[in-house]
Length: 234
Image 1 (cartoon, rainbow, N blue to C red):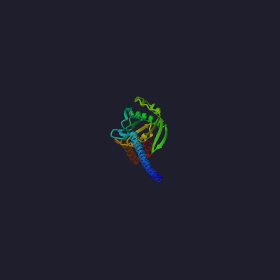
Image 2: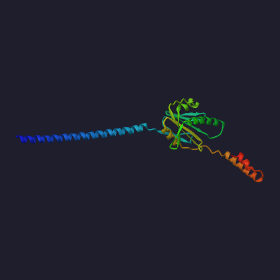
Image 3: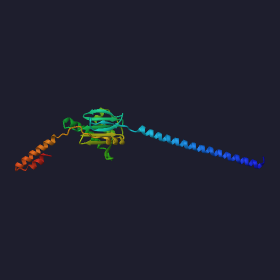
Image 4: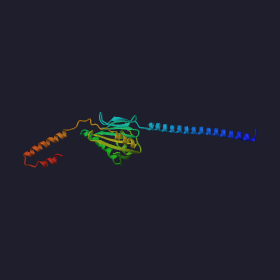
């Protein structure tokens, strides 16, 4: 074999070697792409699982029997009972206070005074409008100084985001306080008001009767009864 043949053989082997190297490099690049894709998929799956794991589940509770409802955190919210006519629910990051102002008796006035005390403390906080709801920021310690919270032994620290609600039709008065503003807002938006009490028309009927009598007397008397009517019928 002469030198020319050796050169040809060397060149041929060199070319074959380069092809093998290129093929191996191609396989390595494909493997790298596959590994990168697998890693990205694992990251995406992990993120989805994390979101589901941290998502908050809610369940509805009745503020009044067969009446107004609200979403509370599922499996964590406990009904603490009725303290002086004020209903209390609590969970690890907040508290729900509800009071129904239907009726007009001495006991109700005492209960309303207790609820209004809570409401006044809440409304001393800094306020902001969130999606149409007024949210007050207070210190949890300020709220827990009220006696009813000592009875049920609640213990919270830090900021409370509180949203007070009321409805004249159902007579429901609600205060939601939570360390998490998003939870408080979700709960406020979830409220579905429903009146389960009969409309009290006795006062309206009495007023109508007085007005009818006054109109009759007015037609028969020279006295200006409009002044009397305006003074005593509001």
